[in-house]
Length: 274
Image (cartoon, rainbow, N blue to C red; front, side, top):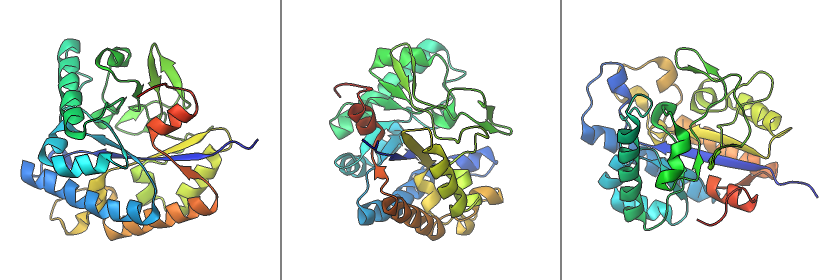
């Protein structure tokens, strides 16, 4: 029997604090507003194509958009992206990190009325991930097993689903051998043909392909007034919306299935319960 090939669309739903990294001023209200507008643009595509996705949400964004996040949870999976996006759990003391993560998880769960079992660290900054099950997290998706200059070098880490104690690690997809990435930078800067090629390559030896985006990417950053690198602003807004829509239509023609991370893990017997 032919195994189903699953595409896991994931979105880090966070306050848009990226300009602060480039010494650009942006208020909390603007950070939330840009991400909210991007989310609304993104949902037009997902609703039109009738596909489901996983949203890794910060508690800060959820608290500022309770009704929107609650509505989002009715169709899509809501996972945790930390208490706030500025948190650096890699350098925090262990007890403080767990305290903030536990608080964030409880806040998000209260808003959506459901258990949250997944986690992705802001900027992938996390240590001691084996401790995440102590606050009820069943899977982590903070590992990008490739080399990104100036950011991280995970080139030789495991690229398939594996365990850290009781925690399931679900890496963001990269190809075998060359470890070519499929995340937001590649999707927008290297062309749609590249992403399709890498998707097919990943499916040669993997049951899933996980892509990563941010809702703020679905706002045109070229007209935002922020002085950001070209690779961050390139093909944002309507152009990215068109690319994602085209990618989804292509994937459907290939008979690839769209799923949430939680559903995929459950359907494959990797996790049980909710």
